[in-house]
Image (cartoon, rainbow, N blue to C red):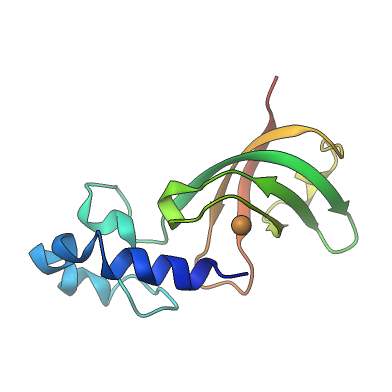
Length: 126
Ligand SMILES: [Cu+2]
């Protein structure tokens, strides 16, 4: 899992101008584990909490006991992630009930200082 290093690279590159343009003060409020401002902070995005990533992918595995789902996902722009297969924790464990292996899904996820990335919403793509 190398999302973190990719994210740092993105922050220090493309978004440096935005950060320097006036979001440094806001960074202290982000509660981000990197100690870096999140990428949405300079882009008119609404919240002071962790950015929400919007992903699309295919369910590869479901662990009802652990409350996790493994998804082969495409790029998640908000996190600066390219596509990969990884395991997410479900904020609402009950959302596992409706998931099926092999199903195409869309999901919202947050990094919010958790050990793993947390899916806050997930739904099948019709
Ligand atoms: Cu990933």
